[in-house]
Length: 429
Ligand code: AMP
Image 1 (spheres, rainbow, N blue to C red):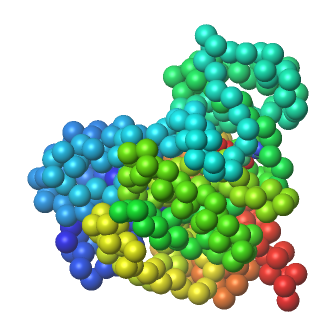
Image 2 (tube, rainbow, N blue to C red; image 1 turned 180 degrees about the vertical axis):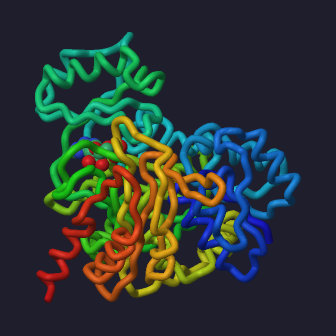
């Protein structure tokens, strides 16, 4: 079969690599891909942008693609699955109406409240109906969120009412463009964060291996927020008991609620969870796709055929499927460009990739491009050095050995990815 992966980041390199490993797949196309997918056996990049829906439909038709898997949220929220379905093409992901779970935080909050799924108390405003008195009556800190897609940047934790009011004003004034015309203000929830990713289809759910990412730029979770500086799997924070609670109190009611609302869900579903001190799993957000960089360590551990799982979900047969996981831990360290996340410099040459290829583990590319035979940086998150090991600590050592083998001017990365899990491992010994 022929598979098409939509997108060009580290998540998409991992998806393409995993699909290419399947004996039933003879070719994987990636639109538009990066230097890593360009060099992957059985994989071919095609210059069609992830946002070009008519171009992607035409590509899938012309190349007789059997299965398309969508990486980023943009095309899902724009309705890529509806377009592919209308053209008689199989595309793994939610339709536009269901992708609103990620595309509109206001929609997600109304959905959660309607179905009694635990989440922070909130109110949604536009400039026309903004109620400053409501906001002033709330306890601080408050969390202010642009409702629409803001590339992970539209969330501000405001320490006091003045900061919350100023943040709301900035969002209405267009700080995040149209994404901030509607604003969600919610209570701050204390606790520990966990992410939880499942595949869904035909009313059934298959949880993926647990994972955890690090959002902050600097060691010890300091510095500005980023798209993610590293991730590991499994995540010891998700104990068996918590896993059960998240399935029963969040995932299952979400899939049932979507079906009841006439929005049957097919695709990856990612729930960002804040575990309250009493163990309640509160939903912070939904993503309608895999996380980046969580995908890289999670797919390193997947032993089952990903294309078979996607096909089972699309056929409504996921209930009969099982996913097999490598019992080892995997850990990915993001190597970021100079200036990331504020003002990214691109065009720097990357060295040492051949040296790294001879080491155990795998370097996934994200913001890279080929220029002749040279690999240059082309985005904020450049590479994700991913290791495997008997423990998170061993996976971490393998990942850092890979990271140390490559270099480019201005390269920056955290030295402590996985530290919480490693502390837990030490505590358990
Ligand atoms: P979101 O995109 O909604 O997941 O928010 C981004 C990040 O902001 C989350 O990963 C949390 O660290 C933090 N956050 C969001 N909402 C809350 C909340 N209600 N209480 C505490 N932290 C939050």
